[in-house]
Structures are given as structure tokens and as C-alpha cells.
Length: 130
View 1 (cartoon, helix red, strand yellow):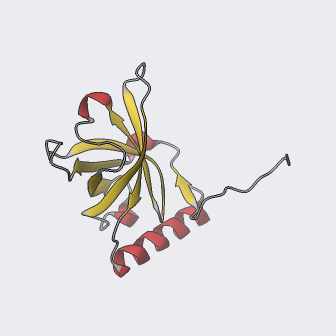
View 2 (cartoon, rainbow, N blue to C red):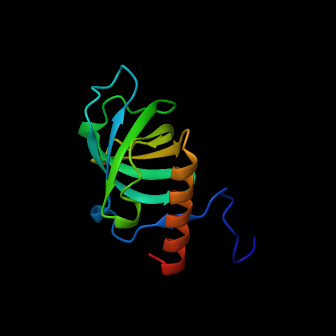
């Protein structure tokens, strides 16, 4: 094994230093969930999706393979227009001893404008090294 191995990801990720300041409102699109928007913290983001942290008590209807909606993002002015984005939950990391659950979700059916806004945002962040 070498000292440095590049990530085997399709897209570059932006990892946020203080995710408590970067929030997203999401909701389940499946009938199982309440449909109400719940707050989450964004831990990292790429052109492909996001990783969020959600309070266990608010996890209603969010499971692997389910569709969710990203309603809005706060704390990132450069991407504030990135709203009402459908996503699919790819994985859920749930440790029963923790108060929060980690969720990885892929963006689903982005418009060309949304793709361009997201690509531009990620490029700017990588240049600034947020």
C-alpha cells in the first residue's frame, strides 16, 4: 500500500469544517414518512450528492433506497438557489448509541442549470479550500 492513494470517487467532495453552520431542510417523498421537512447538517457535498447528519428522532421515513427532497440549504450563500432537488438515499449509517444518523444521498434528475450551479460551487470551494 502506498502512502497516498487517491480517492476512488466519481466527483470531488467538499468537506465542511463546521457542518453545524451548514443546514439543509429535507423530507421523505415516500408515503411512509410524515412528509414534513426536517433539519439536517451537511457534512460534505459533491456534484453527485451529499452526506448529512440527522437527529435520530427525526429520521421518519428516511431509509436506504427511498426518495427524499432537498428543499433548501442555508449557510452557503453561493448555493442558496439550489432548491427542491430530488435525491435518493444510497446509504444510512445508524449506530444505536449515537443521537444522530448519517445519511448519504445522490442527487436525482438535476436540471442542466442545477448541474452547472453545483459544478461551479464545488469548483469555487475546492479553490478556496473551505
